[in-house]
Length: 430
Image (cartoon, rainbow, N blue to C red; front, side, top):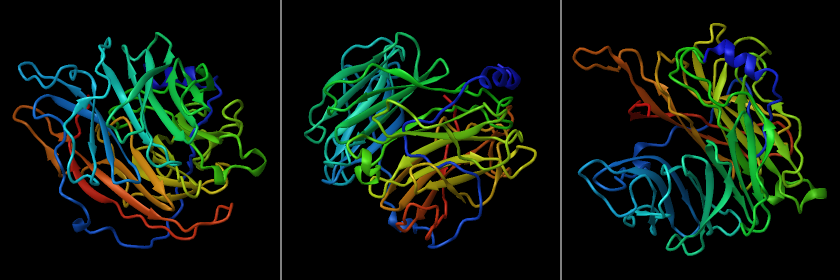
């Protein structure tokens, strides 16, 4: 589908961001603070999963009791068996010693399912610091299942089917805070959400909470120079301390997404202070001028569970009139998503050169410490060639860190750091 076709589809819609604390804005200058972490601060990488088969799309979380939880999709390979019910299922591994050693992989839900299980999400409840929640797609991506463990991953209850549209959905998103569990996903150019206010015993019927433009922006004709781009939404629940005093008993929810409503791809965020019953108007968080043909895409949002600040990172072409040079922007909101301040998150802009950057990035924060991970293209001189085939643009992983002091409900930024660390990574699309 051409970019022009997508624009005609998207502009009439009223895209909204609704369930995650997000901070999305354009790129002013960043105040530098500390140097990057030395390599010695990282442990040696551990090979996970079985020796046989293919594994991808990991999701990871940790609790307050030295446990780390890893969930990922597994495929058997012909002639190489692994375990009963492992093929096309999600496998879970648990570490009881902060990642030094791991349990053997096993299917978190070994029941037979049509078309396999996809898009794992794993989250530890920040309130009790121990209950582990999981969501995933199954049955040809037509239903969303939720499971939980209260014994550090030894057993899992469920699955509870919180959505059964019987049509293809994509990219479930899970947010947890105490008794509030929110699951969001996109389908037919809308963002849907199913919410539990009783610790997962029951979920509201999923309903569209936001109309958005197409969540899939296609190939290089949509975002020039990039292999493909999705606009998956994220959702989050704010800590109780950051909620308005008059509505402290209701959960504050945030959502972020990107769409074409303004003629190019922009980032948006919305919030709800009444358990998702109603939503504030969408806030456009990138600050470049409207209708300028410069894209911001592949956003990711997180909410600091201690301070309640909202952070969003996204690829940003706002500084390039040709819409080619791409940087990474980190945006922060300290007033519940009403205003955002943006910081340059990457060192130098890069050109896509037809590379596949993946389907999403990742961002996490705790008590003012922010970590982001994303892919960039390697320098043009760093390419991979195979006899008889053209050079393939390589990508590298970048990790950025930032430190923010606590501040009042203003857009004042106290201190920050950003120094991405380059890590080698393959650039193979699925």
